[in-house]
Amino acid sequence: MESLRIYNTLARDKQVFVPLEPGVVRMYVCGMTVYDYCHVGHARVMVVFDIVQRWLRALGYKVTYVRNITDIDDKIIRRAVENGETIKSLTSRFIDALHEDADALGVARPDLEPRATQYIAQMLDMIGMLEKNGYAYQGSDGDVNYAVRKFANYGALSGKSIEDLRAGERVAANDAKQDPLDFVLWKQAKAHEPADTSWDSKYGRGRPGWHIECSAMGCTLLGEHFDIHGGGQDLQFPHHENEIAQSEGATGKTFVNYWMHNGFVQIDNEKMSKSLGNFFTIRDVLAKYDAEVVRFFMARAHYRSPLNYSDVHLDDARNALTRLYTALKEVTPDASELDWNEPFAQRFSAAMNDDFNTPVAIAVLFDLATEVNRTRDAVLARQLQRLARVLGLLVREPRVFLQQAAGAQDAGAFDVAEIETKIAARQEAKKAKQYAEADRIRAELLDAGIALEDKPGGLTEWRRV
Ligand SMILES: [Zn+2]
Image 1 (tube, rainbow, N blue to C red):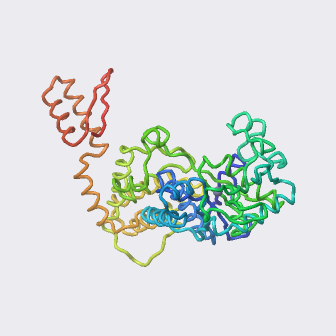
Image 2: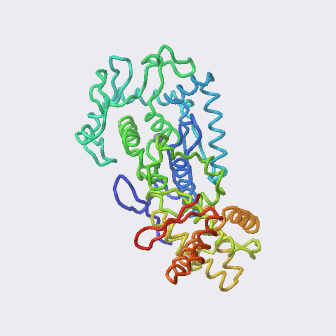
Image 3: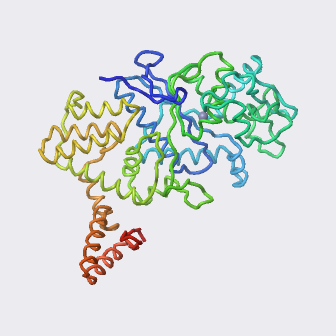
């Protein structure tokens, strides 16, 4: 089998993956700050790295996958105070919700799920090492900061110099910092904050900065030097840049060999944001779409590409997944295992080894489904099911999925291909001056919740209403 290649953000290139210890992979992914429900962007991080860890295991590696939980932070404190509850009560509730969402999406639990508040001692140890090595100082306001200018490689991950960063970032002026880019390692507690939000330390009572949390949890659980660190693209700077500066500044060792970042989620080609009113939680989406359809939709995009969420794309994903399940209609379970030497499996595996190229791997599944439909070959059908299951797809009894999908079709009427066919038929009717027929098609689509709009140049656009 070809070896696995991973796009390493640090190298800006695909590199052959060589683990530090043969046969073993240690991977850390930045998890959620638990003060609210997870949104579609969180779903993508969870699904992307779930597929990464599944593929590493399929290759035979023994994987330790850590995804942390940030359970202390300004937003958490603010929300708990607003609600009049303890941070423990607030964060436990949203950790339960996170688990429910992840389970629904078929995301396996990470091997370790450390919570920041359980690692305060290790964070303080690391801050102590940074102070000893000359990278940390306590400002006049009592906060302990990291002196970025002391770390020679600062900016290597994001590919920026300190000068670029100073010019490009809006950094708040703060007299207590030696440089505006310096970031906080330990924040002094404020008098009005509840007692359960701070810890005693030699720097005074306070709480850790966000960046030191991941450095301390990663080094404690995976060792000071480990294989893969992942997260959303938005974490590249400053969060991951700061993690490198902290971990390497404290230990003097390389922190991570491969940095992986997944692309943004957009909604109808726009950035998802609360102010634009296009912000969706995983719960909002799962109220409308089957969870496996959502997972399939995410898997069909390459993890580094932006993912454009829209109802049209989700409808299309449902139809495509239905095609795969239809090919499994007659499959009967047996005890045989996936045959990696079979040609479709080899193509699938080559795609996955090429930086987890799931869109190509899923295209192989469609080719295989076509072959199953043509030959009715039960061995190939089982092969399709097993390959898809490597990605956490086609996990249900085909009949159960198909019945549900048929129900959704009745409610949601036409799929995209049917709509396009009907629009083409209406264009033909108009060309032939059969206006009654053209109107009939328009009305039929409208009954099914599809509104048409004729544009200059003979184009017709449609949208769901
Ligand atoms: Zn992190």
